[in-house]
Figure 1 (cartoon, rainbow, N blue to C red):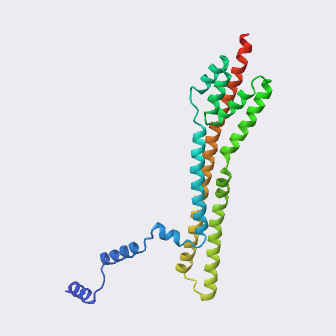
Figure 2 (figure 1 turned 60 degrees about the vertical axis):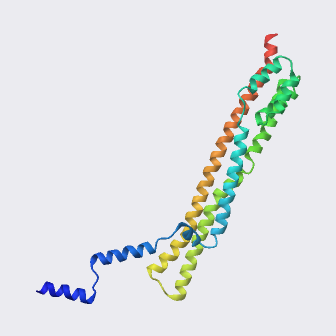
Length: 239
């Protein structure tokens, strides 16, 4: 009898049951779900320079990657053809082939062909100077990625510090020191720190990757240069 009376009173007073409370909590949690774009927009004004830095990093990486990839394409039959032309005495054909081949190694070989007849030391020095210029061309604008990798996290930390200053200033004005107020203000501003760190890490990875690709091209250039010097010395060996 008593249990039945309690049930009737619960129904009449609309006391929520456990499953009802859980359902309501889940609904509230679903309403509080934040989309990524909304989360980024809550980062504040400093998200604008961070967004600009990310766009610059993407542009520089794509542009440099395409340039370096083109520089690394060397035809397998390029040096054998140069060898055949030079050993056959057809210097003009070798020069024409190197001029019409668009990569750093070919430009080094072209400079060496122009110096044929001079001492080997002078030929090597001329080719080395061209090689340095070609490496500089490939490394152009890579410093931008290095700068972004360094300053993007700083922008992020600056946003967090500015947010904390603003939060504590509001507390001093309103005397509202509830956990919700403090945590809400800080987590929103820490978005800039997370964004800055992500941009910095990605920029550093891109910078290191491109440098590794440049090293591969430099190795190919050095191999071609050494082979060319050997070709010039072959007639002397056969005489």
